[in-house]
Structures are given as structure tokens and as C-alpha cells.
Figure 1 (cartoon, rainbow, N blue to C red):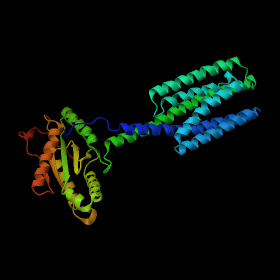
Figure 2: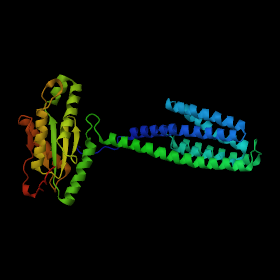
Figure 3: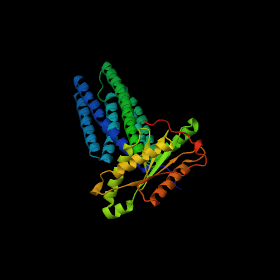
Figure 4: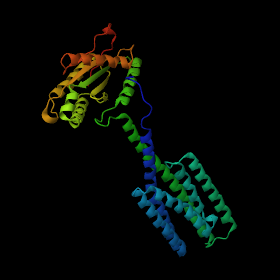
Length: 367
């Protein structure tokens, strides 16, 4: 089962990131909503509608409270007030100025907010969506059958409606822009979590398998060589038991830095498991891979380590053969590594020669 792949292990992390993205979007949108109400307050004050101006100032303050709650992570209360702010303002403004004022457009903004919210079951979303639709239809019927409580001039009403149209389109566009921006960042974090070893910062086993299989496919198409270096820290159990797990972690992080320093940008270094590291060397034959291995080994042998005690590594080197799988190529590096362990450790060991060594592609000049 050395090369088996588990199902996506980042499901819970994905849910957490989606939730975080949702709250980040609401936090970014709340000041915009408050600014729209503030603009309405100025607009109505200029039109001489003082009560409407004061009402919008009150909703500006409410959005300020919602913003503060979101910043303070009081998300449930913030969402409750959001459900008061948007439908409540649309209801009051429509009854006061009439359906033609266009304040009912803002109810539609609840649809994306509701359906992308985390933690709700689909049945809950459908129920809330149905209630919102019923509210919208009821508001339409009520507004069309009643006289506005505080009508304004037709020309002014047109300007209010145009402003509401523009604001609705702006908020929808801003919602989409912010949401996809935040989600893009979250997906980047998820990809990093899924492909990076948290201790060393190297590629993890999942990532190195993807890289190695890609290079094997490329090797089959283009006939380019591909080599592997598999390294294991010598006496690592002794380091952990005698010097503590924190020192062991420091050793692994330092080893990762050494390995990164001796390879090219196109090469990939991964933590293969425990104290083992795997290096994938595209377009590299055995001779050059052996030189890379020796550079790494000597750098470790001469390095400065925690507690000023020497730490070494034994490495096995193999080259992929066109008729074999990734597992077979790495297994030969593993066999070479253990021959090095039995021979005294702190050495680089080549794989056993193939039956037809001349069939292997040669390595181009390495930069």
C-alpha cells in the first residue's frame, strides 16, 4: 500500500475555508451597504424629506453595528440583524415611497447571501428562499394596492429608482468580485495544505507522487531520463529519544533546507515519510543524480546541527526505466539506501545495474 492514494483529506478544511470566505465577504460588503444608506440620507435631506433622511441614518448605524459584530466574530447576531436590515428597509421604504421607488430591488440581494451561506442544510435554504419569495410577492401586492405614505415628486421618484437600480447592480457586482477573490485565496491555501508538508515546507507525499507520475509520462513521450534520490536520516530514532522530539523536528527542517539548496528549480524535494526524503530529478541520468546525492550528503556531514552534534544521511539513487512503474523505480532507490545503511551509513549508493544498462536515456548537461 506504499503508493495508495487516500480520498480528499481536506474536506473539513474546505468547509472551514468556505465559511471563513463567507464571513469575509459580508464584512467587506457591510460598509458598502452603510455607505448607500448614508448617501440616501443626504439625498432625502436635500429633497426636504427629513424623516426619510433620519430613517436612512438609522439604517446606516445598523449596518455599522453589523460590521462591528462581524469583525468581532459575533456572526449569528450579525446575520440576524442583516435579515432585519435588508428586508426591513425594503418594506418600510416601499410602503413610504411606493413600489416605483425601486427599494424592493434590495430584497433580491438576499438570494446570493442566503444560498452561499455556510452551515445551512439545503432544506433550510429552500425554506428561507420560499419565505423570501412570498415576502417579495406580498410586498408587491401591498404596495400596488395602497397609496404611498409619503409620496415625492415624480421626477424625484425616478431619480430614486435609478439610484436603487444602480446600487443593486453595483452591490451584486461587488459581492461577486469580493466573493471570488476571497474564494481564490482560500483555494490557494487549501492547495498548499493539500500539497505541502507542514513541518518542513517541502512537497508532501501526495504532491511528489503527482510530480513523479507526470515526469514518467513525459519521459515515455519524449525519452528524457528521470532519476530519484531517496534519503533517510541516520540514527533518527536515537536523535528523537536522546535529544527530544523538538530537536528531531529541527533536524528534519534543517535537512529539508540542505536538500533544497543542492537541487535545481525544476527538481522537487519532498518529505516521503517520517525521516525519509525523496528527490525527483527530471532530465537527469544516474551519474548526475549521484553527484546531487553526494552534494547533499557532504553538506549534511559538514553542516551545523542542533546541539552541535553531527547528523548524517544515507541516500539511495535510481533511474526510472521505460518499462517500469514509479513504485518499482523508487523501490530500487530504497534497496540501494538500505544497502548503504548496512554498509555503515553516511553514504550515497547507486541502484544495482540493470540487465541492459545501455537502454537507459543519458542525462543532458545539468545547470
